Structure formats: structure tokens, C-alpha cells
Length: 557
Image 1: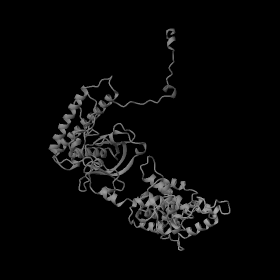
Image 2: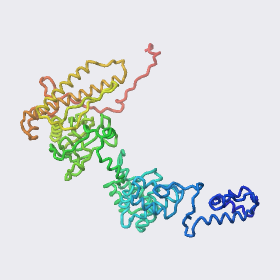
Image 3: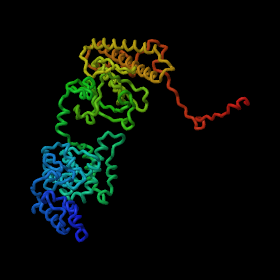
Image 4: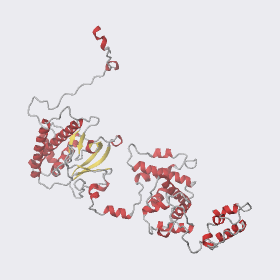
């Protein structure tokens, strides 16, 4: 302060009665000294210093509380929201920090999203508020993951990485004070908390690749307990606790209620389309179930799936209504516990003849052009899955909506709704026949109007996309019509008998009765072209050496 500079100048040569006097007495002169002080009168420097120190000491009570002197317009006071000072270190004491921490803990005038802003600052007052806030939590007897879950549910952990790290450090100190025998130091607790946060992101985040194993988790924490190792059983318990149940983050009550409350705004319609949202009917009929091994081959619109998502996973699969559900436990068939259910409306299942790495594999292409590969246990089981998936799609798929229209001449596929069609089998059969004829005519017209080879490459791509779409739709509607014809002629609701009649109608030797046509001419080879025999060659035979002859020397040959 300015009066301290005056103290340091005592004994020196200070001008008597100059304008330096109000500068030295700035903290208190306007409140305590009459405004008509005779400044030109010579005053000794020691006297000015003594008066300044005396008046400054009079601004506080002996109890340490600020005096209730009348404020003047010259005195500045920091902003105090909700009656308390901000956590920016401008002012405050331990009592104010305790009162603010109590209001933050009980959410008295604050939201969960506002708590972290008072705990994460790098100043003394914020540290006092954080310590007082953590004092309301009792972590005695709780494991580290249990205490961390309790702490993260009290408020929303927001801020930058360093700010979050400060809050977690306060938590580490509080947990160590409640459980001093569990860990050596608060730093060891903090190290383990950071490892748990990273483990939670690795196991439950949208990461690509293999998740962290228990052995890798143990290896990463070797020597991190202040030079020694953490107990292995303790680390294993933490690992499997996070793996079985991820860390839940707190959310504000108003945000939760706003998300659960139905809205009629335009932004809500963009996020959730009622025609494309998959519906789950608890009372739907189960058409087939069994074990299938699934692989994601392509994402929406035929985009190739990332490398980390192409692994094969085995599930107990249930075809219930128009949805395929996948369960890890066959004894727990709750639809809520299913992993990434797939809608089979407007879908087509075919035998994956081009995939030769595994046997009994069939291909499923959904309405949004997701492509999945499924491996069944036997060829008969594979054919049963193909037939029943296609039958359900043929019976309950609703008519498509017209495609979106834009100013650009870009091909857009029609909208395929997820709603269940209420038509009878006869009407559904006639509707699929009409769409099959329409798609066939459109494909013929499209093939007649070939694009100009000298045109833009974009026009060629649009032509190829539309041709691929029409060929797929023609094959899909032909499959639907054929299956519904057998269903109408069978006159039974027993799917096992229907599969027998379908096999008889398509031929007993046909490996995929729901898709292939029988050949009317005996000259055609129904089994397809013979497979080529691969002959192993030596390395020298695989490489051909071509003699490079310069153009100017060709006439010499």
C-alpha cells in the first residue's frame, strides 16, 4: 500500500508540507481527515506517517471484522452475486468462504452447473471455498470409486483440463483425510483418480480400437504410489468396477426436465424424426431367435465402417416384430438391455456369396444402407434367418415417401418410414408388385439415357448411384413378392411349414430359396461357373522382366 512507502521513507529527506502528503495518506485520508486540511503548511514527515498508520489501524475492529464506517463514492467494492463475493480472489475471508460453500452444497440459489466455477479458480479464496465445500462430504469407509461417484453426482464438473484437475485435487485431499490408512499420500490418491478418469473414457467413450485391459491398467500404474506399487487387488477391483458401471456425470434438473418434456420447436423435429425413429413394441411377436455372430461391414449410406468397428461379436439374437435385438445374456431378454438394435423395415437379407472367410454368412442391408454380416451355426439356420427377416420386412414395411427435392440435380433416395404397415397380405402383395413394376420401368428408362462420356465426372457418379439403387430396389421387391406369394398360397401361420413350402417352391437343391430364381432352360448352368483352380508358382515366375527399348532405337531391331 501507499502508506508502506511512507514508512520506508522515514528518516530520509522527505519534503515538508508538499503534495506528497495526500498520496501517502490515500487509503484513509478521504474518510478520516477533514477535506479542508491546510496542505501548504509544513508538516514533519514522521508526523504524517504516524497519523497515517493510526488512521489505517482504526478502520478495523479488534475482532477482525470490517468497521461500519460510512462509505463514500470513492471507495470501490467488488461485485457480490447472491450476497457473497465472487471466487476471483478480490476479497473475502474464511467465514464468507464457509457461507458460500454451504450454499453451493445445498444448491441454495445456485444450479449444479454453477458450482464448479467457484471451486476451480487458482486463487486463495477459491481454494478456501473448495476446502469448505469438500468438508460437507463424508468419504470414510468408502472405496475410491464409490467416493468419486458420490462426488461427481453432486455437481457438474465443467471447465478446462487444469481447472478440473484442481477440483479433483481438492477431492484427493479430502478423501485421504477421511481414509488416511488406505493410501500413503494425497498425491497417490490424485494419481489414481486421474487414471480412473482416463480408464472410464477408454472403456466407455467413442474410441476406435481395442479397449484397455486389466493387465495394461496395472502396468501403467507401476511405481506410481509414491515410488511403490499399488495393491494389485485394489487396482483390479477399481478396473472391474469402472468396466461394469461407467462413471455417471451429474446433470442439471432443468436440463433433464427440458429433454424429457415434449417440444414442438423446429430444432426438436430435426433431432428426432417420428418417421425414422425406431419403435419398440413390447407385445410384438417373436419370429426367430438364436445365436448369431455379427460384424458391421458398412455404416449409413454404404460408408465403409472404421477398422476398429469391424470385429465379430456373438449375441443371442431375437427377431421381435420388425426389430433385431442383440443380447449378451440369453437369460436376460429385456429390450432395454439390447445392444444397438437393428430395424428390418425395408431391409433385404441375402447370402454373402462373396465373403469366403467364414461359412454360413449372410448379408443384411437396412433401410439407411447399413450393411451387416451375420454368421449362423448351420446352413439351414442361415436360410431360416434370411427367409424370416425378408418375410417380416415384406409383411410390415410401409410404402416409401417421395424423395426430397432440391435445386441441385442430385440423386436422393426416398424416405423409408419405420412405421408398421396395417395392410392385409393381399394388399401388401399388390403394393409390392406395383412398386416392383415401377422400379423396373424406371431402371429401363435410366439405362437408356446414358450420360455423356465427355461430361462432368459428377454426372457419371450420380448416374452410377441411381443405377445401383434401382438394381437393389428391383431385387428387394422381387424377393418380397415371391415370399408373399408363398405365404398366401400356404394358408398357414406356422413359419416352419411355410419354410418347407418355400423350399419346395424354390427347389430342394437351392441353397438360398428366398432369393434365387429357377432356370427354365436346361442349357443354363444353375450352379454357376466352375471355380478356378489356383496353381502355385515360384517367385521367379511371378515376376516378368520387360526389356526397355528406347524409342529412337526401335528401327535397329
